Image (cartoon, rainbow over all chains, first blue to last red; front, side, top):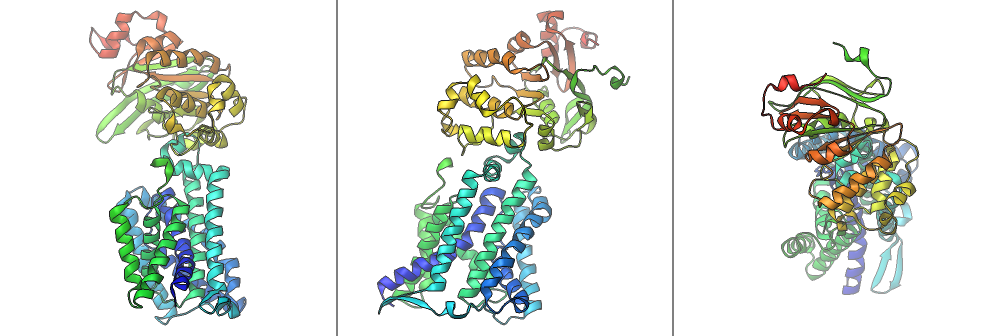
Length: 289
Length: 251
């Protein structure tokens, strides 16, 4: 590793963090839920692929075809049933419910898949890299994840900005009662928002499974990184989330460059520093500024 | 007495025996109202009389503990707010409640997305309030209170309401602005629709309304046509002083 390589790898890692953070940011910004089960849901996505893939194809890329749509439907249904009902009881209830969901998911995965770690095999893509020079090479998989992250964030941003459903999602995020007054079916619209958030969670979980090994308890760490990316970037701003992911990724890889055991710690310290100096994040949403 | 026996053919929105509770407190007690097409109906009363609660209950934002609400003869008592919007009951809420992160045009588009189809389009709203067309890409938080109120009315109009519910549109606005907004009201009321306004400013409300009722502590204390009642009678019903309120209730 050298410095240029550390920066490049940091940015690539940032793509993965941003993908994780996207769903968290969306669910919090629109639905008002701090989803403590976010990381576990991502891991669940990985395990769904582990369970179904053997009957589909050996290459895990095929999981991209069926896991995200399944999670979209799952998100819509959980919003219309479990999450909506907990929201009506106040924000503390949603924290407890999603925390409970996290515990249930972890233990169900332990029961079903044991504590052994799994990974998703993407064949040659996992090892192939673009060799720029002797000191810098970029993994196609990591580059792909970054591209997917940017595409997902841009897609969600465009969807929210340009489509009628996207406008209604923003209306609910601004003022849910006013949205109902304007005729928006808020239960259906928040269900769609949750569905989109779950699709991104599934993508993040699959990306993580292709990138590293995962176990039923891996979700907690992912939740923490996603939180940090959202807070560093600024709540309610999807581009901020991408920037937050990249800042966190850079901090971790540059930290590891300084001392291989300190990568994660440096990431947390940068997060704390941002929280202390700019509590609203580096790129807070402009509308409410 | 069953009111449905005497339902006038042109009745658009009706509520009978509405009682609404805010916790232990009864915000409305046995209030009835009948709004007919082509009219502007005013609900007046002091602060806390239950006017806004009545309007919000009609819009589906509060649940009625008892009583029934009908739109065009269809019982909507248990329907959610957005369903009532599709039936043509559209509220302009107190405090305007625009979407602050959105432009004027986006606010109107949200209103139009789920409303009824009809003669009110974004273009027609821009024709009525011409300043809006040039500034349609501005965020609504940058607008003055009066401008925001007009956008809120526009957002309701593009849903093509059959009954437009206006909650305290004069609140916090300069009198000259209020007057201008009220002047446009008649051009808004089509033959097949009605406007139900809630106002603290009795004089303003009586000037435009063809019928009215006065609420006091959640009860109807006076109803009828403005010209049939003296200022003293209305004041007595409004503040709850004077003799024998019960006898002032017109049937």
